[in-house]
Length: 104
Image (cartoon, rainbow, N blue to C red):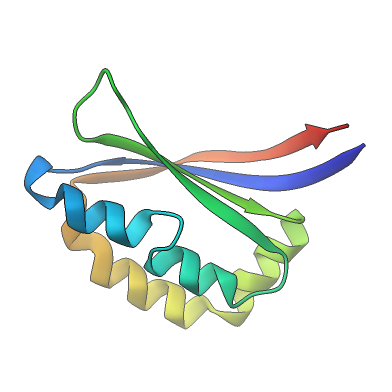
């Protein structure tokens, strides 16, 4: 069985920032571009909650927890700068957790 590392975030945004948020946090957005500079990044999904307006989840997939840790070490300054830049697009942000995806 193959395993990959997944990190899930939850965001609450103002509807007026929806387009900007989706562009930056989507699978081709600024976050995915930054993650893509690191080895072991597999992709990002952006999910919009149908029941709760303004609520989103991001699912970031990595080959392993070690690949994610290496990314954070190598790109820590760029990560922090992008986080500050994107803070204006969200009202709330929280890490849901880290998971291991099990695939046959």
